[in-house]
Image (cartoon, rainbow, N blue to C red):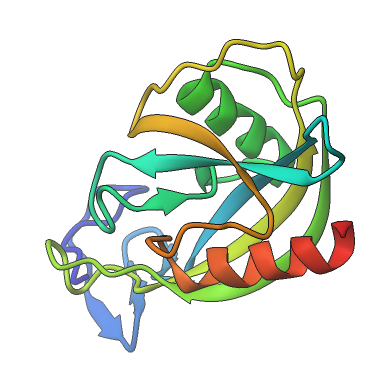
Length: 174
């Protein structure tokens, strides 16, 4: 995106160099980079011993109405696990009991509304657990949550990285 003003001093940028803005006023180098995300592959066990995973239905574009792994974009300077905990509180109204990094992938994030915005995400996926007796709430940018057996993931799943992460989780857990 071709930003016009420096976010540090407010001066109009003097130079644009292949995704890098350099402010001659304060010397700030502004890079347009891929966005980091964190996803919670929240797992549990059914009474018959089968592994299940909690998915959420997206309430926003892209992929509105598709199933998704709960999580989201990290804030600037935010620790990935803390960002993931924040996202789970915002989306599901609950707390994570644990979070163990098990997979990462680069994925695309289509932005038809702002085509110049970074098109790629760096996705960190964590195996997580929540209290099985907790009451989940669909909040923020999701419309519902539902448990699925790991071997019965719905076809209408958002983002290629989510598909890869769920395949990897299935390999690790079954």
